[in-house]
Length: 233
Ligand SMILES: CC(C)(COP(=O)(O)OP(=O)(O)OC[C@H]1O[C@@H](n2cnc3c(N)ncnc32)[C@H](O)[C@@H]1OP(=O)(O)O)[C@@H](O)C(=O)NCCC(=O)NCCS
Image 1 (cartoon, rainbow, N blue to C red):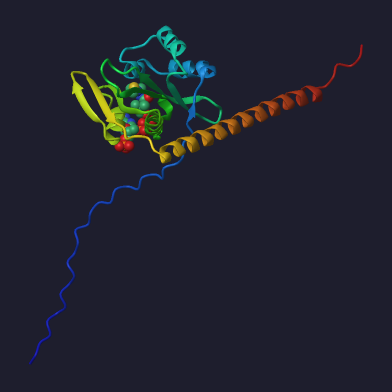
Image 2: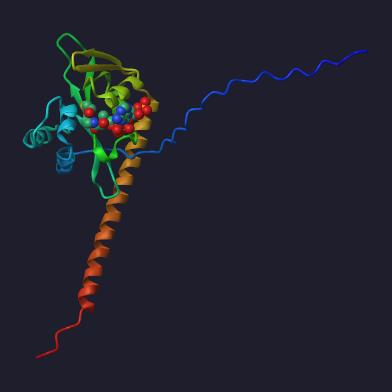
């Protein structure tokens, strides 16, 4: 008698934990800031608590020191990038400072500094500002981007590490060095598209704010007109 062998069950694959899906990346409008934005930049910086000021500048900058920093920003030489909310409050800003080449070195370098309002963290704004700063720097011929951060500054060092920067830690400080590729037609087009789209976004927000102010004024006028008038004496 021939006994058929029972079918061999397929090997059971060990179940692997699947990582939670990342939220889809949404476009964040980032605008180049100019001298007329100094007040908004200062308001943003003054909102940073003492520890964030320490992380941003390497020391607990006072209000007066930050006012001086904002006053000294050179918008012709450097680039300052910002993210606004619907009410045109500056939520985040990055300063890309172009450095003079060191004696005997022809290579162009720039330094990156950034701050995100405490209530707007973890949304990818810091990373987005970094990516756009890299694009601007590339297109200006920069080959080395420097980031100075305190060793404890995990989010900043993650941003630099994710971009492929070499991070050197010394004592309580860290220096990240990111080598940038040369610019290309695509990198210039990308910057142009980003700049124009962010400009349109800003104008729409500005327009919406004006309309809202007009609406409030009309409502106030309406309320005054409806108020009962005093009888003539
Ligand atoms: C550093 C700073 C700009 C980051 O801004 P952000 O918008 O919160 O950063 P992102 O949301 O883009 O997150 C950047 C990375 O850090 C990680 N991260 C964010 N917050 C974190 C936290 N509290 N602990 C550990 N990792 C954190 C994110 O997961 C992300 O890494 P991933 O892309 O690998 O997941 C912000 O914390 C800040 O303004 N700090 C004060 C000023 C400062 O330190 N400036 C930098 C020195 S110039």
